[in-house]
Image 1 (cartoon, rainbow over the protein chains, first blue to last red):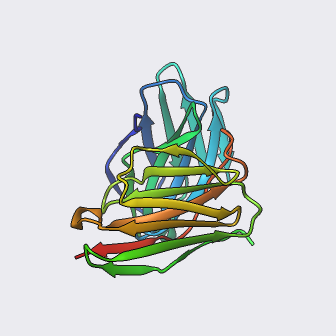
Image 2: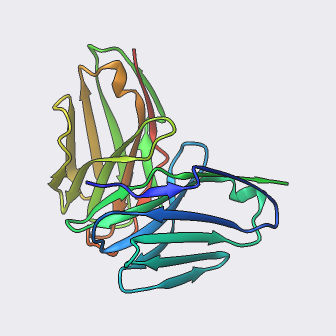
Length: 110
Length: 114
């Protein structure tokens, strides 16, 4: 199975700035999900976008999906120190296997 | 209750030991998952149970043996592990194992094999 590739690998911004993370993948997908992980513990689901959707919002999160380019982006607006975490895109492959990308480490400085 | 509970939180074992990791959820979910995560790497899928039946085994070595005694419980039995098996083991659940579902994760068991 294939993983999503994310960039950047690490991102450091000031509180209040926006953070953008990108995810690319190789095959057809059913949906794409984003998860957050604090300090190497459990993952928390952030948002799910289906393959027939182009954009989705949840609070300060905005996710886009471009199936023609096989890419997605996660935008976090007005970042806070509490947003410091690792962010993973996860691709739901056909067969219902959720496969995670390499992740982006976000650090928000206060 | 939207929690997935994993025990123990930390485990140290020798290569000849037998131990088990436990996972429990009371959300009525019918799909449960084991993932393995090495430091600074993404989680890797190991096993999926759907309606208490093993539906996906990602070619995991037989020293890892999953068990799903009922819809709320998931175990991972460990035997004759190697030091390279040291990792964070994450359990997750979802409503029915269908495609457009989100996964709920436990906080993991940090395993060290000496």
